[in-house]
Image (tube, rainbow, N blue to C red; front, side, top):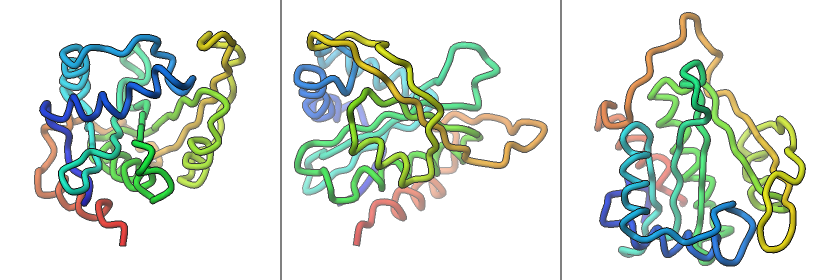
Length: 193
């Protein structure tokens, strides 16, 4: 059991976790389940710069977390938006906390300074996770999405990963990080005992 970096062969298992969030909840604003091929391409695009992690037990992926670009303009490059999804049997076991903590440690190694969580409301579990991990609420976009026949508010959370040194640190692609250092972080967060 533990955390590892996602590989392209995980696309089907990850999509299996994500699909019910699309079809049965307002948690994601995605409306159509992507094909496995499209989802695999999405993973590859994210992994061209950011980490994409999975929690695996006995060969089964039970959850995943990844980071992505927070905004288009280049001055935002030191920020990342986080995403996390868990299978029902993984909830309430500390897996989300471990995935998120590991992801933030890896992003800090990359030079990322701030991380943002974007949560469709209501989602008490996600709000509690963010608050328990030191995020602070930035604000709410009211009625910003329409899904399942209703308008949905979105809350934004932020967390600083550093004290914002000057000049800004260089950014490194996840694939350029020292493999041994990455493995140490994966191992540290992958142990729930």
